[in-house]
Length: 274
Image 1 (spheres, rainbow, N blue to C red):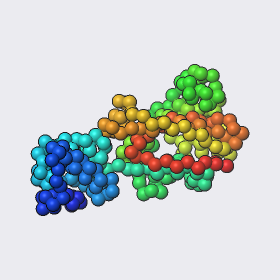
Image 2 (image 1 turned 90 degrees about the vertical axis):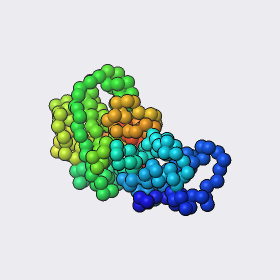
Image 3 (image 1 turned 120 degrees about the vertical axis):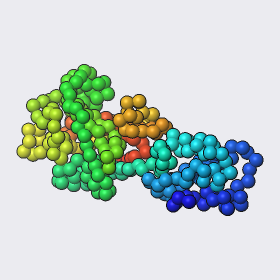
Image 4 (image 1 turned 180 degrees about the vertical axis):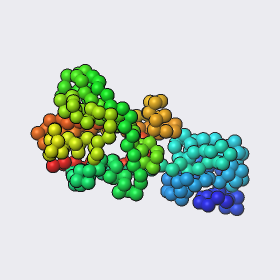
């Protein structure tokens, strides 16, 4: 038996534990047992499940029934299948994002973007890919939060966030032209420490201090393009985070729209940036 296989997956134990006249019972039991073993960590990320024939023998079911059960777990995002190798517990990097005033200031002193700093602190490897920097007309939601006219010119920086080479979120950050124009914010290049670090730089051209942020979170199913870019399996939702960052005079500095894979994040917000 493959290491980590759960107790019901032996024919010896099965006959003593499973009795039902319901023809769907083995199918449901396979799903429930494997799901439980994955969620409790009994089956570890990346671990291979028992083969189809071993599962079929253990549960007195056909291999077709086993395949149907595995397909459900794959749709739930719990397993992946590899041609000729079998089914494996899906490795999912979980990012625990704790936004607090203390964290924010410490990361600013270290000149590290908050996402990168927290991922590193959790022993994982972050990456932010800058996909595009554009000047566009402000979408309605963004314009309202930046307190500019709808369609007013803004600069947007589009990024893809990754952990251990796996995409976890898309993030589009919008800035009023009055802040971004003529600065590195409007240029297609990285900014050491992140844009807010540049905005707050006392020797820089903007020199405004972040005071607070307001986050609006909603959950939904991803669009096809989001599912493709974030490598989401069927059934995995996303969390949309619309964050507005204000300076100490309560003037908006930035609006971030993030589309985060729901199975790869934990969020906690406790924010006073001053």
